[in-house]
Amino acid sequence: MNAFRRPLPLAALIVLAALAALALGAPLIAAALGQDPTAADLLQRYQPPSAAHPLGTDEIGRDVLLRLLYGGRISLLVGLTAALIAAVIGAAIGVVAGYFGGRFDALLMRVTDGVIALPILPLLIVLAAVDLSKLGLPADIVQSETVSLYRIVAITALVGWTTVARLVRGATLALRAREFVRAAVALGARPLRVMVVHILPNAMSPIVVATALAVGQIILFESVLSFLGLGIQPPLPSWGNMLSNAQEVIWAAPMLAVYPGLLILFTVAACNLLGDALQEAFDPRRTMKR
Amino acid sequence: MIRYLVQRLAQGLVVIALMSFVIYGLIGLMPGDPIDLMISSNPRLTSADAERLRAVYGLDRPLVERYGSWAAAALGGDFGYSRGFSRPVLDVLGPRLANTAALMLSAFVLALTIGLPAGIVAAARPGGGVDTTINFLCFVAVSVPTFWLALLMIMLFSVTLGWLPASGISTPGAEGLLDTLTHLILPVATLAIVEAGAYARYMRAAMIEALRQDWVRTARAKGASGLRVVVAHALRNAMIPVVTIMALSLGGLFSGALITETMFAYPGMGKLIFDAVMGNDYNLALVALLFATVLTLAGNLLADLAYVALDLRISLGARAEAGTAR
Image (cartoon, chains in turn cyan, yellow):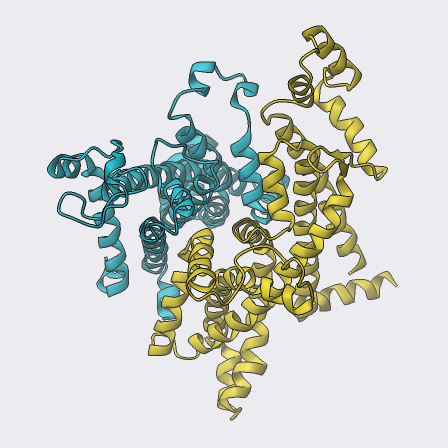
């Protein structure tokens, strides 16, 4: 694709692919180093970088590189899953609003505008603090180790759908007037079929762009919630909760506070660059402007 | 204009009523409830006492009913007591609101003074060296986690260099305007850096769009100077979308303020909400979050009015409407 002939978007793609490969290959790297990312060794605290520990060890003697890679698995998993769920919600709302139009459309779009204008982070903090057993979820789920993972995916998806909804609505409004859609309607296709088969496939480009941008946003939300102690719960590592440990030992080991932040920065910047590049690739009018 | 204003106000009130119900419901889902807390502080209470207390405080009634009585009291100006501060919620909120306003306003103004000129300069020659540099910096600014930036600022300016205080709003024993300002520098700078990146990107996109328009070409053709074309012709039109987007970014600005306040232990609304949620101070969390929402929506409304003032097409229509009404 043309978008990737320029150096920056290409670099973004390479960075993301490398991060994903490293995160996926984390168990292999752990085996190669002969280290266990969860094994604490109090005799090996704050070790400088060495052959056994390429980035040294943390405050309880765990290998920093492996923790970063396993944290990356979590952060990328949350970002991708939540962005995909958000894209599905947003596409559904957008296509329904655009297709049926009228008061229904006006109502849905007012709701969307309302959500966009809200101070999202305070709301996420309250959502993250909700006691799941009060929602009637069984105790074994509420107390399981991975519940923080599902919870963060659910709540970030809940606030991340607005951009997709607006873009899909716009695309639907334009597509609804096109001949092939009108022909399908005239042939007796039901609204659901028209929306799913004829409109959504032609509205994929804005969905892809908004989803790429949403991945970055959601990783930012995940990291700050985990940092505040409301997101991914230890012992599960994430870049956010690693930074919250690092803050407490910042005098003894300042580098522990640098690595996870740099990784978040690189990942989010790469997602943003990629989203921008895709937008230009899909929308020639905007490309001309550069 | 009046009709538009009334319509927007009515819409805003509906949204606020809806949001207050949603927030009320959410706060009710937070761990524990006031009766649990009473029981934990007084071991002699039995479960029968707990049931009686629930009935006395009306906690056994359905959600809608409880919300109704809370809303009625709130409309009468009674927002209840904060458990953590043992004071009326509004007394706690007042000073925090002023602190947050100081932080957000300074950061907003600083972000505008950096971001808008940067965006305009970048748009003057898209793809050039200056544009590429500004673009790169913007990408870093919008992608950096705010809390991490705050952490780095503290490490550099407070710990290593020792120039600026890392937390709080005043030095005990040395209070004064200068002291307050010194405490504001790091939080304001952190918040402004993040916001300036976003504003520069909006401004750049809007300016490039405006500079492509026919009237700009006409202005150049009739011999207007480059500066005059940019300022008088392109900038005024480019400001319209920028103002709208900035209005929508108010909620984001508040989210950023919450992070910076928490990182720098700055006693504002954001930190108050966070502490109230963490400390099970239901009433305080509820009212503070509601206040933050109302203020954000009010800001949006103001920006909408500014939009009308800036955009001749809309205000002319409104004036014509006002004319026929008279």
